Image (tube, rainbow, N blue to C red; front, side, top):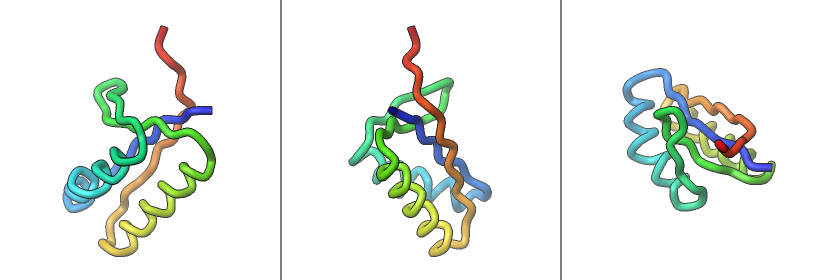
Length: 78
């Protein structure tokens, strides 16, 4: 099953890291789409979701920020 992954943020530094580091990394492995005005990535498989979660945790710990993940089942628009 495919899911969409949206990366949220808490402070301006986290927004900068999201756009300068996290999104480019996700772009290398996952398809980027725009959904309701937000940039999300299409992800398939629990191992990919776990990988992204661990990556976000590492960024949060290293930079002392609060990136968040919103993971939703993907339903293609008809």
